[in-house]
Length: 156
Image (cartoon, rainbow, N blue to C red):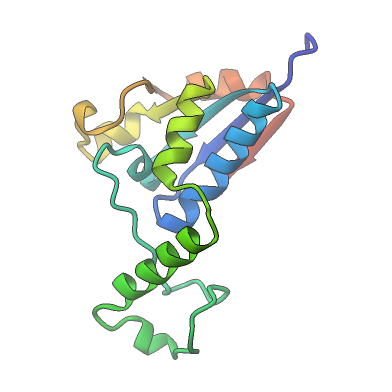
């Protein structure tokens, strides 16, 4: 290493709760003078959409604190995803947590290199114009080059 601090993050999840960790880590690292590369692949591409509508599902996440304990079967009922999303959004706002959109903008302003996985873009037939400006479209090789030079590599 040449003394520069570098971080590489793979972001694979596209739900409201999973959008936060990689963005918080990336913006914090950028504020600490790390050169940061983020590789958004598979469902993580949802975070890069211009029309951001991330949701949260209580299904499959037993650690998610709900106002009342619900049996798993009830979590699958229509409307539960909307309720869980609304509860989380209210909690984030009440606690003054920056929105995903704000964190995403901060990452770009901090010169975080955001890579949209070209293979996934093709696989799910995303249109480039549906994704935010300022990102790079590239394959896994581009991320591997960044990861090989990173002091810290994270998978989220």
